Length: 312
Image (tube, rainbow, N blue to C red; front, side):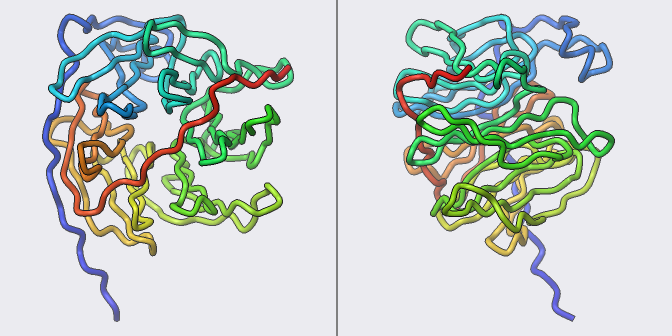
């Protein structure tokens, strides 16, 4: 019988911690729904780097966007009445947030101005957006998770085209979460949290999808969350229920396991550093950003278009 080589285990280190001046344990609508009413002082998500090497993260329950410099210093960029989850750069100065309450929102990182990007679809609100990724022609793929799960597989995967057309690529998903693209952008990988799985979604030349399949199965109380891709086509999977980041090869075999030294809730990740061989991960249970060095550099992320589409 053929046995796989056990994955190498590597402990992550603390890069920076959300300063105490930004922490105040408070009960919110978000904590009532997601933390059984227990107060929370933060819940970090959505790490993404700008061209200067600054890291941006969001704090879901308090509607905050932070900038973390390379020396670990935190600055509050924006705060608004929303629940931002995933972040990606639209252009040099604007982030797009997948906001659970408000839909797609646009943040100017120069002055903190927050404006709607796509708050609704045909006047109907989304269930609760989670994460997003751009391809190199400006298509924006994003997940609508809400409170879906195995009991109610009603999540969706959308594509927003540069001309403003919005496509439902998949529905009936039990908790769609993180998304990323293969190096050739012919395949999208989708974290399906409540199914404890990552799906492989081939993107067809006619704009549709076909032969969607199960790529990776995990285990534990909370399944895959944020995803990232390296240049070799290896997939990194943040698994909050285990406090792991799975590093998978093209056959979905774990080659490395990155472990949190603190809490369990590793929510999302991004490649950074001067050579893009450092992976940074948000540990939402402790309000910290962790990091680890890897051999293969991360795949550079595409940005979107400068102007906002107009959709009714």
